[in-house]
Amino acid sequence: MNPQAKLVSSISLLMGTIITISSNHWMMAWTGLEINTLAILPLISKSHHPRAIEAATKYFLVQAAASTLLLFSSAINAWHTGQWDITQLTHPTACMLLTIAISMKLGLVPFHFWFPEVLQGVSLSTSLLLATVMKLPPTTLLFLTSPSLNPTLLSTMAIASTALGGWMGLNQTQIRKILAFSSISHLGWMTIILTHNPKLTLITFYLYSLTTAAVFSVLNTTNTLKLSTMMTSWTKIPSLTAALMVMLLSLAGLPPLTGFLPKWLIIQELTKQELTVIATMIALLSLLGLFFYLRLAYCATITLPPNSTNHMKQWQVNKSVDTPTTILTTLSIMLLPLSPMILTTL
Image (cartoon, rainbow, N blue to C red; front, side, top):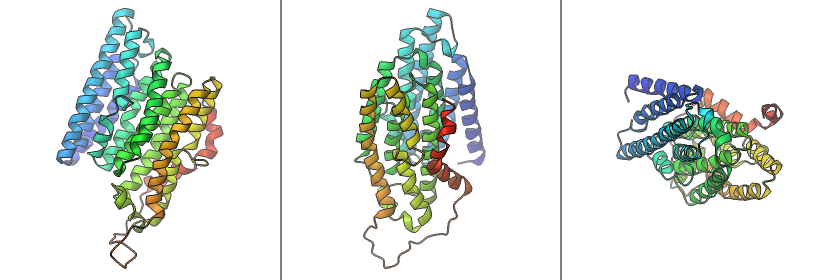
């Protein structure tokens, strides 16, 4: 990809995100989302592979439809109330359309079908952007409109996302698809608490993004795309592969790792709101995700596949681990002791 084009796309991506998360007017928020969509398309299709072009086409069609719905919902609200302010979304039809639009943008069930397919068709670095940065503007809009949204609808979609993200991830061998279903499952956790404690949704999103970024960075360093190559990745950078196992367990939400904190806080908050049945359901459904995280961790560090060579090491270049990967890895594993400080923000 042309370096100048890559620079322009990256700056546009940053600008679109900033415009959306800092705007109070629906038109500005929509403009930021459109800039984001157009900026990511060259990054998705940069390899010129048919799979990448297919992924870019699917992404564009879904995001364009979602943006149209979002604009339509804000227009309906403005027609009935005379307000274009994001926080003044009060008309029931507008709220319903907005929920559908943002669910399409995020990839929540039942609008999730595009997300695993798009992630499978792009590189690991672009997958990281799609799974984290591109979800920030829609999540911010959900946060701003949370008092107006329907709790029953959101809870239903959240439980369905957690269940389907776990079920569909069980039978996958492609790591990008597994992480796509992991993302859908985590979105369920974020959505279920949205109407009860919106700040907790943002904290969950930040910690999910941190851990996912660390996992993608390690996979990018070891050039691992499927389970069969993951089995031999330990010979490239053994220490980093060992850290990958712990990061996957953090994504699964096991204590005493960073990923345990948001799940613990969400279950605690749901119990406070007397939603014990929902808390129990989502906790049990997360066991499905735990299974495929354990499967990934097992493949990464514990198994050794049959090999035809007597040499222990693969052909390898001594690749040093870069500083951002090291920092992300540390944070994705060891943030739990900071939980008292994080709790003060809620």
